[in-house]
Image 1 (cartoon, rainbow, N blue to C red):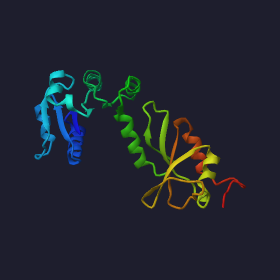
Image 2 (cartoon, one colour):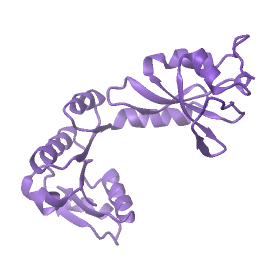
Image 3 (cartoon, rainbow, N blue to C red):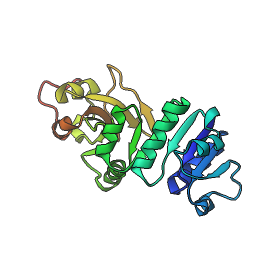
Image 4 (cartoon, rainbow, N blue to C red):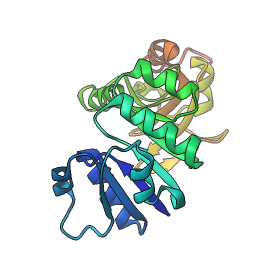
Length: 224
C-alpha cells in the first residue's frame, strides 16, 4: 500500500516508521522542513514540504495512487479539511483525522470522516493505568455512547459460568484475557481466578454493571 501522512510530529513520524517497517510505501507532508528531522536516518519514504490540504502538495506526495491518508497535524481544522479534500477530490476511502476536541470529532464522524479524539483517548489510557479496580475504558465509538471496557469482578464469581454473570448484570462479555490469551466465552465457559473481563456496553450502564460484578452472585444464580 501507498500511504500519505500529513504532519511529521511525534505521531506522524512514528506512524511513518511503523508503516514502512510493515512494507508499505510512505509519503509524509509537513509545512516545516525541520519537522522531517524526526524521521530516522534510514527513512526511505517521500518528504514533501507544504500545506497538507493543497492539491499540488498532495499530488506530489502521490495521493492519486494512495490507498490511505492520515491527517495527524497539530490543527483540528487542517486535519479535517485535508481529510475531506483527499476523500472527496481524490476518492481515497481509507482516511482518518486526529482531532483534539471530542465534540468536533462527533460532528466530523457524522460527515463520514473517521476521527481519533486525542484528548479523550489519552485520558482513557491514563485511567487504565491509574485505576487497578473497577472500570477501565479500552475503546469508545465516536459518539462516546458505546464502549469496550475492562471490568474487575469479585472473587466469589470465580467458578461461575460467564453466562450467569452476563444474566445478572444484563451485559455482554465480549472476550476474556486469560493467562495472556484472548478467549471468546461460550455457553459453558467458567470464570477463573486471574480472568480479565472485557464488556461491550453503553457508557451510561457501566457503573451499574460494575456494581453487579463487584458483589457475589445472588443465591440460586450460580451455575456450578
